Image (cartoon, rainbow over all chains, first blue to last red; front, side):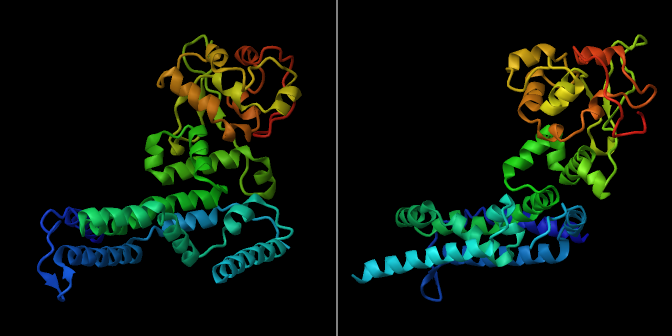
Length: 79
Length: 288
């Protein structure tokens, strides 16, 4: 279920980037100076960061990391 | 005067960093240390490097011009889309590439693709990096005698010698040993030995009439029988252009039939015209 939710979140964020609703919309101005379309994508960037944080926290491919560490080439001795 | 001083000061700092790094890295002459700092860079340097890589002329100049002409959409086109696509790429692909690079000592992505190609991993293996890792690991392990000496893994025959293709056994089909790596396809017997022998191995085996690697695709294609699955062009490309893993393999693995009969067979002699006898001893089994 958790993995399905994460996949759903990724797909949702991808869909949310297809911004045809505020793409060229400048007004109203958020905080009096930020165009609404720009503010939308600023929020989108924050959401993308949160999603990546969630992915790393919940779905980081630990098995790949462990496998690589286990089978890594032995390093030559250093001085 | 002041701008020139700043420029020279900057150059002096760069030279100092170079000299400092040179002194610190003295004695480490491995290419891995030079290009990858011995794989010691942490996430901060990685992210700064990633940021610097993306700060191209297009990002600095092109996006400014685009924003001047098109307005706020530039941020959505470049920044917020990158904010999703790049991290996802690193998450899904970068971790796999990192694991393969760490495991097999890749320095450049080209090495990864070359090795994957030489291991005959098909695109489905690239889509499933775990299987590709397993395949590459087995190939590397089987092919490196020094690994065996270190006890990492015993060399095992990559191919078995089951006779296939008719009661007469006119053609010895070589079957890949490990079905888990997904490479259990039948390979044409004539294709493998010619490309997996190193020059020294050829001399040791006492024959010299195998096609050279640079002998030309047409000449090699004449020796390749029809492949049951792949087009000759694709097979030729894989065999002729991407043989690095094969060159690490002991030649016996591909030539000697491991199974019912350990020893020279007529078909194998045909594979190696001019071969008077087989070398004694087999690194993959107890046959001597």
